[in-house]
Length: 198
Image (cartoon, rainbow, N blue to C red; front, top):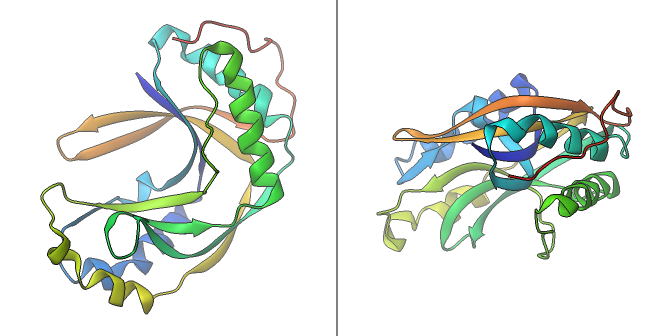
């Protein structure tokens, strides 16, 4: 199974984010939008992990989560990768606050001894909202920059847990399911996080 570690958002925040993209969705731009239930902040993509090792992944995640106290996540603005003028991934911005950076750091270091390479690129937290369709051409998205420049979004979310998520690639798009959760700042009961990586 394909796994990743994420900060999930409350259902009402997901709905607000989804609703906020209505001006873009109404244009009919060739963008595949995520459904509200799929909206999240990825901390680390683990990739393929054998199903029998999922519990061990959850324990490793819990060990990392215990080192960071609950904090407030700040959402601010929109953007796109690789750029606004050439949008392929559309996202909502997330402020890289010290607690969020610490959580990301602890997750990276917790999984490193178990065969998962640490991310070396600068951490740019974001919440993916949609992706340009594979056959979309640059000209098809020329209105994107203008519309998104007129949009704004700002919110805060209390973060108390991190989640181990499973990603399933379906013809209709990716589906995400939570398979484990760990509370921030709370030492896990039992287990030492040891276990095979894949």
